[in-house]
Every structure is written in C-alpha cells, then in structure tokens.
Amino acid sequence: MTKKIKFIIALTITFALFLTGCQSSAPAKESGTLKIVTTTTMLADLAAVIGREHVTVNGLMGPGIDPHLYQASAGDVTRMQEADVILYNGLHLEGKMGEIFESLSNQGSTVIRIEDGISEEDLLSWSENSSAYDPHIWFDVSLWKDAAQLVAKQLSETDADHSSDYAKNLELYLTELDALDTYIKDRVSELPKEQRVLITAHDAFHYFGRAYSFEVKGLQGISTDAEAGTGDVSSLADFIAEKKIKSIFVESSVPPKTIKALQAAVKAKGFDVAIGGQLYSDSLGGKDSGAETYILTVTSNIDTIVEALK
Image (tube, rainbow, N blue to C red; front, side, top):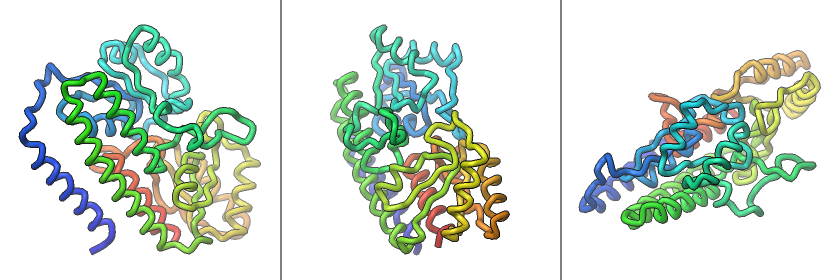
C-alpha cells in the first residue's frame, strides 16, 4: 500500500468518526445558512470545511483561474453586496479587486481577510526591495492552519448560535492538516537534498520551499501580471543546464508556453530537461481532477514533484 493511499484512507476514517460524533447536531435550514462569497477556490474549500451545513459558499473564481489577473464583474460585486460574509486572501493576491473589498468593508459588510490571520514575521517579502509580501501562504500547511483558525473565529463571531460546530469543524480540519504536513515531509525525505530544486512558471512556491527545504525558482515573478523576458529565460536555462535538473513544472492557472520556451532554451544549451507535470498553484483542481480540495491539491502537488525529481 502506497503512502498516498494510506494517507487518504486515514483522512477518510477521521472524517467518518467526526460525522458519527456530530449526528446529534441538527442541520441548519437552507434559508438560515450564512451566505459566504469567496475569491479563490482554496478559500471556497476552506469556508465549506469550517462552515459545513451552516454555510452556503459561492466562489467567484473557478478552477484554473488566475487571481492575480482576475477582474470582478458587475455580477460579482452584486453577489458580494448580498453576502453575509466576504472572504478573500489579501496580500495583493486579488490585486485588481482591492478597492472593492475596501468599499464593502466601509459599507459595513463582514469582510474576512486571510492576511490578518498570519503573523507578519511569518510572511515572505515580495522582493528584496519591496515592502509588500508574497501572497501564496497556502503552500505552507502551518500557515493554512492559521487561516483556518481565523475563519473559524470570524464565523463564530458572525453566527454565534453555531460557534461550537465551527470549533469542532476546525479541530477536525487541523488534525487533517497535521496529517497532510507529515505526509509532505515523508515524501520530501525520498529526495536527496541536492535534488530538491523546484522550477515553475511563476514564483508561487516560496512558502513551500521554506517549509519543506526546497530551492525554488519561478520564471515569472510572484504576480503573473509581469511577463518573463528573454534574459529571464536564458538565465534560468543556464541554471538548469548547469545543475542538471531533471524536471520543470507547468501550472494549472498559468499558460504553459513560458515553461515550454524555457525547456527549449535548456535544450539549446545542450541539456534535456523534462516537463515533470502540472502543479496547482493559484487554484485547486477542477471536477474529477483528484485535486478538488485543498488537501487533495497539496497531496497531488507533492506527489507530482517528488516523482518527477527522483
């Protein structure tokens, strides 16, 4: 039995035991659920996990959508205005929507910003010369636990009648996240330290690198709003050829053309590097992808990375 199968079975058993223990809790009527609007797919999953039967979640961004470039439609704004709670990442991830969140907050809407649940000392700088921070905190499971605690706290304050259920849901989820963190570390241990080099389309994985001891390089910057130049491609190609890195990775929310251009540039320098597979960076996987939740997405990513770099 593989480590992945054992991990998924363990999570399933934990969830089943949790449901058994909660059967005495009467489900809320559909009309009485909190209406939550989220930006990213990761946050939609988080809200559903913590809120369960007490919430109705509407995610603005579907699988494969790049939040860096997303522009809210008039319909999106209406959905947020009609929501009981708006949940967004912050740290400039939804860069084109900042004024909308500020306006909604000023109008008295309940707006939860994940950024507020993360200690500043745990954040990574956007660049050496910037006071802004890298928004991709979900790739460090310990920081996602902080995000979950913030959401549970805020939902309990908004919907005090169900605060004990939110606390139970949080407790279960934190246990699952601890198991996920252990699984990642076990898989990483299969790679010698010199092979722990992760090269992707854009700089989404630095929190992952810090948490799990990987050297990480992205072809584009932290935001996909900035395109990689020929100098960036050439410099990274030199690095790959010199280090003889086995694989580089495309991302589900970023067009693959830049990574394919990088692969061609490496080949021109006399070394063949493989495209090791697709990673989920700024979005969870879609229906039937096997990566529909945060936990499944992170599991899929680490399996893809380790198998390609072995």
